[in-house]
Amino acid sequence: MSELRPFIAGLPKAELHVHHVGSASPRIVAELAARHPDSQVPTDPEALVDYFVFTDFAHFIDVYLSVVDLVRTPEDVRLLTFEVARDMARQNIRYAELTVTPFSSTRRGIDEKAFMDAIEDARRAAEKELGVVLRWIFDIPGEAGLEAAEETCRLAVDLRPEGLVGFGLGGPEIGVPRPQFKPYFDRARAAGLHSVPHAGETTGPQTVWDALTELGAERIGHGTSSVRDERLLAHLAEHRIPLEVCPTSNIATRAVAAMDEHPLRKMVEAGVLVSVNSDDPPMFGTDLNTEYEVAARLLELDARGVADLAKQAVEASFLDFAGKSRIAAEIDAYTAAWLAR
Image 1: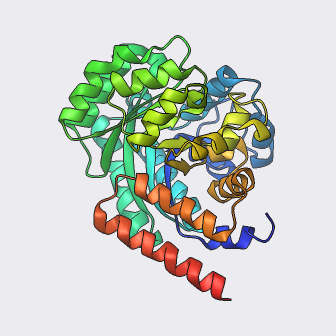
Image 2: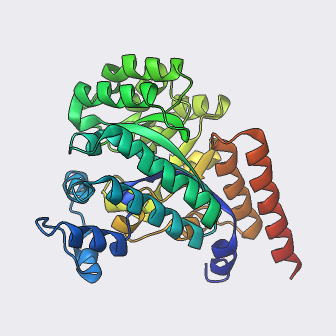
């Protein structure tokens, strides 16, 4: 992979499965923790490396929520959002659909309009100053139940910010059946939002089927267990329903036992459209460039194959035709110049 590393670093990319708070680097988390000294989160970026070592998915959720609790004011929201975009720009990420959980902030007392203003102000600044185009996916924290679903749907539909394109569902899957959220997804879809729930990460293929049939999923977050159902894989391939694959995340949360056992190759061999993503990158000690290196190894790709993988993420995005064409052309031009060296 060493010869591909510089190619991947300069490759224009899109990212579709990456969480707002989960993208806070140790630098950002330490700054937020210093603002709120009553928190148990370390203020030393080096100490955060150990803090972000997880025993299982439940422990990951506990740590994740402790970082969420650091985002307490609109100024915190704006700082987090713009600095995440800055980290993306360093990786040549041109476009990202950032999963945002507004319920986690509004229930902590941040005014809902101030929250929307903060993310939108950061979005506009990121595009103008960094060249990173951000769009939002508002997701329901599944562990918070139907109250959170109602609130997230209301915020998405009634206060819809300009950058909002999708409606999702995150958090634990075990004990959180997908069908109960159908009314909220119906309302969001009727308002023109795309359906992008997590499913099949820590549960079996039936959760993915539920996301498709009950929630109208247009993309699936993770979908790791889909490979255990050949009929499901065929359905995903036939209908071009993408899977948002996050290899290092799956290992960190113990959703997959070892990287060599990751089902990415089986997904691709079945003809499923996949995108490569980082999920909660600093928490998992990764970034999108690293995830492309991992995918290149698992799929035995050369530079042209990696570029094709990057174009699949663009295809799977909710960008308009002009936006997709622009980034795809940039990927092609970059790859042609690289191969001509």
